[in-house]
Image (cartoon, rainbow, N blue to C red; front, side, top):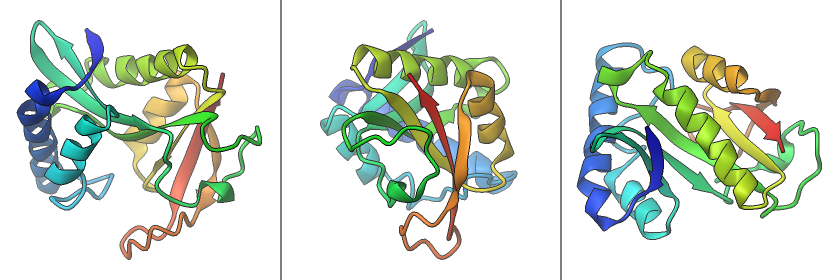
Length: 172
């Protein structure tokens, strides 16, 4: 497996992956409360253009996707972080997904670990993220990789069905 930065040639594959994931979640338990509105095709295309979208591949097959950004897309100042870091000193994991056909095969753990490696190589001091409270699979994954809970907070995203988020961090 490898985690690589997306370019325009990957756009169709990564948007199709997110759509498959949303369909799967809608038919099962939608822990992250994703929908066609998030992650949207437009948002994925923007992440690809800005160099923030990554995919996990193996033998040419896309197994997962994740966006890595310095922008937390919300009021991260509310977090109970162990280190007081300024914007640009930490990297944020967004919209990590594994193809439903590849679940429970270590893909998510590999991707989360590679996000940490990329942050270290980029000189960041921490990796942070937020999850919808009750998103047990995500919380279990991040704790397994070494992330610590940093509070349940209102990130001021104005999402009625998700008024607060659980925050996690891994200091480097």
